[in-house]
Image 1 (cartoon, each protein chain N blue to C red):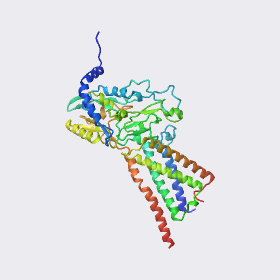
Image 2: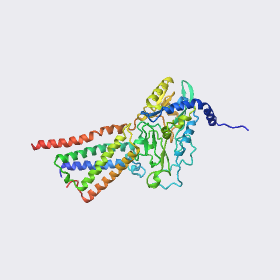
Image 3: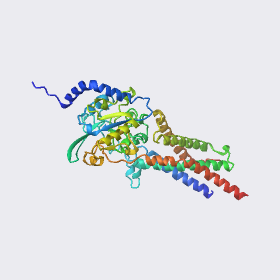
Image 4: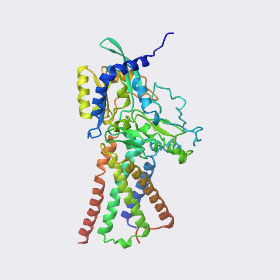
Length: 148
Length: 321
């Protein structure tokens, strides 16, 4: 495997770990379940900190996703090379980026979304996150690849 | 037999008589200024020098919002782990000296010396209704909402009572009642803990072009409500007139509640009773500013990704040549 591919995987893995952690940190669960009491994890109960970390990780994930996507096509990548697992992960990632971007816009001052739209976005974002986590776990266990 | 008339009852009677003439036009004027057609957010100005601490606003708030108050089911479900606190105000509904799920507005008291003269100040305190409210923006379920007129409120049908809004609020305003709300139908033992409550600016009255109950009930015209530009102009004119100070205009990046006081707010903050259910009057930085700045910076991310891929492709084609 090329060093560039290793680096990509490394960045993707770390980003996915922290974006998931900070994402779950948006819910008031880490303090309730003593996880924030573990030395070094106190930040998980600080909502403004997890909010910023989530934004930073999202920036890295968006940049990396678009880099891989364009790199794939620039190198003559064809859609039929993408595996079924790859397609499912792309759907989850695209959905996460779109719903996440809309939620970032929603959080800007003087921006008003319909209440039902906000609830739908929150639930979709959580659902897509769970979907990506399950797919990632399957990929690891069954050694499924993005491309054939 | 002597008939005892409480100060509150006396005031109520007086207001009913005098207020029916003067008040009706004033309230009608105020109501007209908060029509739904306004594009500007609604801001409330509170002239602290006028407040006599009669608590008419407090009682009017309780009466107007009684139907929204929690009706918890007893006994409360056992929650795990043990650190999850049960917060039950249903047996202390009469409390009016702090914010509770049953008391969304209270009178904070302060004694101060202005120009060598000792004065007693009373300050109606409730949710500030921030311009960019962290309670709304950071709510993980969309249970907290902000209307286009600037008011923020918590939907008691959706809130799970996680209290994140309270932790995110610079004034710790929302108060929790256990044993009520959606969490009871989900996983009451493991997630949620009731519903958070706070001032909703009488949104249902505003929808009918009526002013909030606390404003309507005030015998001293402490509060003025209207479009933001107009109210801020009034606040500055009032502050200039009384050689006073303004609070709320810039706190947390700006709020829809503006206090004007003859005493500096940092001085008031030192002497008011603060603590649970009793918000401070300190300066507050814009809590959402970092998030907003990072959000703007995020626009670079997709560009960086595409540029990096293009750069790699360009370098590889150059090497091939």
